[in-house]
Length: 427
Image (tube, rainbow, N blue to C red; front, side, top):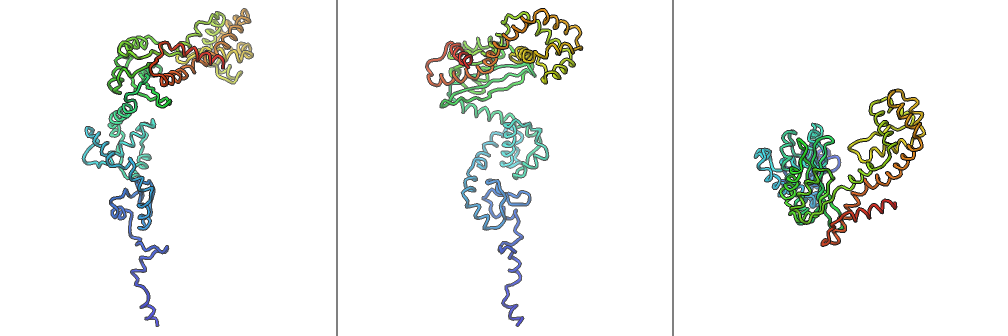
């Protein structure tokens, strides 16, 4: 009887192939073997698991699961995407032929992947030094090997060239406005931005950001702009309809030269810089003397700043040459907390020469000091608001009006300034 039962049982080799879940897939099939069985699919092995590079997901090694995944709509669309398009990878590699990174020892997909990773880091403003071993290991799980930061840095000129080509295609044959400026706050920086209008939508992009060894002259500024516009961006000078800048002597001299070669251009000096100088015309002799002594007091003494903060809860403001209306902000703060002013001066012992002068000024001219202070605070509030708002509002109005009527350019942009200031005064 036992022999008959044993004869009816399936062979042991067949039983060993049946898993507990009922699957008929031999457990010995590994992820790497599945990759070899489907050479036309974007499969790779990641952490000993089968990974689909197109769909960015892990797949079970069961054959029926793989077949269903291959036939899915998501997988078919992902394979057609530009990220995995071999022609795009080949175009990147062909662009890098002059670079030593394009060595024949490195496959095309790996070279293109390194390029895309570095471009993503630069676009996000992340320095290449952040590609630590921890992040590098995570990025390499995609199946492509990265390299050291020093080698990745060699790709930066190629990424810059690609970005310039993208800007050229975007602004091709369009009428544009150019905004340029330099700053010496942290270092000598020369920056240029471009604006254009498309279907009543204003687009803005950074065209250049260069670090200079020394302050730029008017002739150098002109040469930089001409080279950037006609050379790097390949824009016809007749398509430049406006140029914005602040009214420092270098920029104004450069603009005078630019207008000789750009016949359609409108010279837009920074209106905010003009408004910022209005405060210098206020006739407030008593307040000017107080502001000078008040600034000296807090610049020289840390204890006086700490005392003012302990009484009012705010740190004392001081004028800054790089911040618009900073003197007005200081006066407005003192006027807001003028109830603590005499108490502060009575307790302040850190400046025995300046404090008595302020006390004498208040004792002799208290009425005139507070009158001038109130007048400056009230009048300056409107001007400060206009200073920070008028540039943005002006460019919106200018670009939209120009978009509506391309044949009538504005010869005097102060007309628009007058309209904007009226709106600000009403609000």
